[in-house]
Length: 309
Image (cartoon, rainbow, N blue to C red; front, top):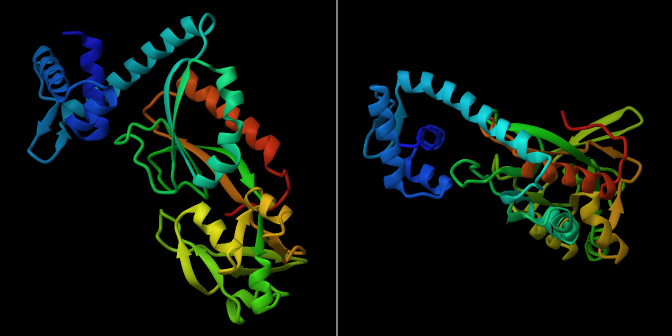
């Protein structure tokens, strides 16, 4: 039995709660994972896991052992990385999940520069706005807009996205141009609602101007849960939009959208990169994070606006 492999298999079973998921994330068979854990238990003469047909639970002894194993695995990984970093470039597979508009408008057009800088990193890019289970789906990190509410993740703030309010010329021709944000709540206008995957509900936005503050959600007849679909709905004249300014830039230049309420400030949207707390930040993940931060700094307008609370 390779003790390192056995400890790694045990730790991953604890993290995923499943021999099957542990095997998938380690890229070995479920039988191998089971055998490694059994050999580890035999060596220690302690039951580490309680197994049923439906789930796997860690025992009290197993939980205590897991804490020590995690520290040991992290220390070993750090030692190997410290020795190899000076001589080798970051390499290996990196799985990242990002929102669809961010991928389409910013990340993918710039990826050639990342690949040129780090040719040995294989980037598997998931593009979605849905919640992602980082451990179960073997994802190294996600990038998401809005506050990260999952306290089991480590979230690194990488940018603030200035927001604007926009409508298509066809919408304004039919409904007129609103002059005050309150008209989206109380008047005849309607918005396209973005249904956040974390809550399943549309979100309100805070407007401020010369000491006046109001929270507006707007009335809607259409709600979507994908950023690209949200932008397309606004361009089709189906309602008024709240958008990060980088998403609206091309449509504004092409006269497909018109900016509204420009005298008002809107609370900006924070952008985060999140990853599991018990997974060491590898060098390949660290250089990707640094590259994304550089990309956002050069592409997102640096406007001093309040952030969402």
